[in-house]
Length: 411
Image: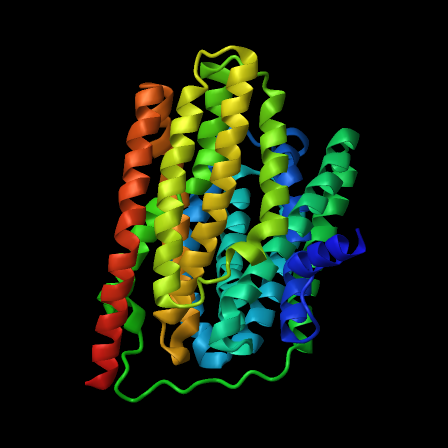
């Protein structure tokens, strides 16, 4: 029993060194995220009195600006130094969060949310680029796996704390929690002070200032990422609507599915990332991801109009397969995002990778609801085919990108 417990701890809690600093910072950031996202919309709709539709418009504007600021923010990280820039973006994000307590209308909300989201874009690019700067290439994917587990743990705890605030339903409690979130965001950035000094890699004289925008192989990988990142929307958007409208399963099943997903990500992300440390390994991981996403779509489709016990069985089976595909997507996409980027430009490359992820996340609700909610199970199969094709293309795209990159460096 002791050995099993120790093995579980090793899969979640990293050894001492830079990787543990990264782990701690991401857990603090996830804690703040969990608290903030749980109460934010209800605070502004119930306590401030902003109509829900206008809150949605403000968040949409903010999300769009966040997407486009990723590359410039990443470039700034490369110029001033990844550690310094990451700390600065976290401090700015924490400071801007306090602006939420002064919002009294939809325009002010859109402005503050946009500023917060743009700072968040820089912070996320910095978190990813710091892994590249602080860890040797063969350790980067493992480090990202640990930080993702940390973020999920922190987010889950933060969501529980936010849930307690919702039960109070008091403006004073909401404001207090927003201020706590602001402090936590800033504190998560200050944790990076404990990292050893990170040497800034000088940009070669022949390299373009905005080289990620000229990098065709990375752009093709970005398009692939736009498709495969839709796995997140399957879980968070399509599945709850599908369960409530097209199956006989009780709605509480969705809570159990979310719990299953969280537990699997926390416990298995490090193990699932083994073998994905290279371009070839990342391509293989994305291929397996596409195959499993197609399978989970088929399982979810089979849950329609079944007896309760059979619907629940198909839903949980699909959720387990989906969680594994999500783990493989994370590992594979991290590998390509790191290995295809030049060492002097990880900031802007991570910013571009984040931009494609944000774009895919933004269009996913439209895609999955159009494909699935109207057509029903044929829509699930169509979505599964799209994801399968994307996954099967991944190894070829990875090899082509690596070959192109090697030829460019040799020239």
